[in-house]
Length: 86
Image (cartoon, rainbow, N blue to C red):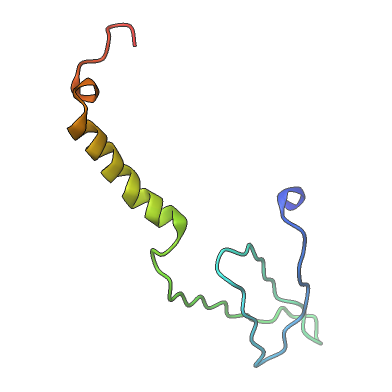
């Protein structure tokens, strides 16, 4: 929804052959603009990523199961039955 988007940083029209780099994680929206004869032009959006699975979320996703497994292995309380009224 437009009222939930962050502050607009750039609003520009790219010409054929232009290139715009948008850093990973930046919310963005692209649209084509009418050509001189009012027909809609074509656009190509290409995403190249060299940092696959290299975000904080990926790290935490790996870390949490290991931390829970370690807590279960080291604490008898973690392995005991839940109370009837949990």
